[in-house]
Length: 286
Image 1: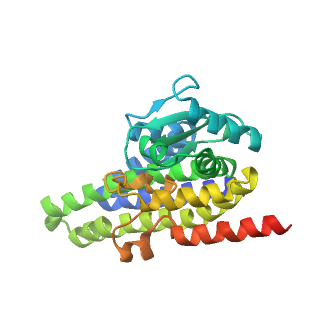
Image 2 (image 1 turned 90 degrees about the vertical axis):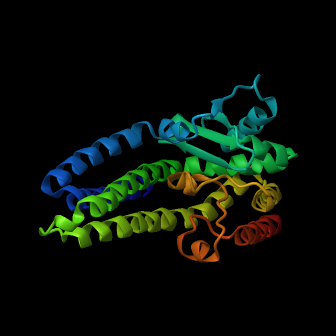
C-alpha cells in the first residue's frame, strides 16, 4: 500500500512540477521540467538518504566507539524490532530533534541532534525516540518524506523563478499562459499546494509511528516523556531555512497558531502524548 502511495505522490508532484515549468517557460519549460522530474524521481528513490543528509551537511556518521550511548540505544531497538541496523548520524545542532531517511530498511539512516542527546538523559526516552524513527523506516515513511522534501524544494525554486519572471519580464507577456497573472499565480499557488501535500501526508503518519514504535519496544512512557522535553525545549531547529525537511523531524514547532492549524506537518504534541498514554493503558490491561 505504501508503495502505491509513493507512486501516487511522485505522480502528483511531477504533474505540479511540469505545470509550473509550463507556466514559467511554455512548452520548452514543460519539457525541461518533465525531464527534471523523471531524473528527480530516480535520484530521490535511490539516493534519498544521501539527499536529506546532504542538507544537514555537518551530519556525521558515528560508530559504537564514537558514541556508545547512542549506538547502544539504536542497537537495542534494532534487536527489539528485528529490523536491519541503520546507519547512525549525529547532527551538530543544539535544538533537540531526530529523523530517519532512506528508501527501505536495508538502506536507512537514523539521525539525532546533539541537543537531543543532551536533554534525553535516560535510555527509555532515547530508545522511545529511536523506536519512533524505526517505525517510520518500517512503514517506508522516510522514502515518502524524502520524495516530498525533494519536490517541495524544487517547486519552491521554480516558483521563485516565476516570481522573478513576473518582476523582470512578465509585464510584456500576453500568451495563453496568462502572462503576468499566470506567473504571479504560479509563484503563490504552487508552493502552497506543495506545502499542503507535505503536511497532509505527515500528520497521520506521526500518530502511527508513535504507536508502532512504542508497541515494538514498550517505550510508551519513554517516548511520551521525550516528546514533552523536546517540545518544551527553549531551542528550536531553524526549519524555516530548510522547510522541505520539516515533516521528517520527530517534532516541528511553529510560532504561529494559524500556521499550526493549516500547514503543520505534525499533530499537536499534547495529542500525541495523550494517545500514547491511552495505548499504554490498553497494553497494561490486555
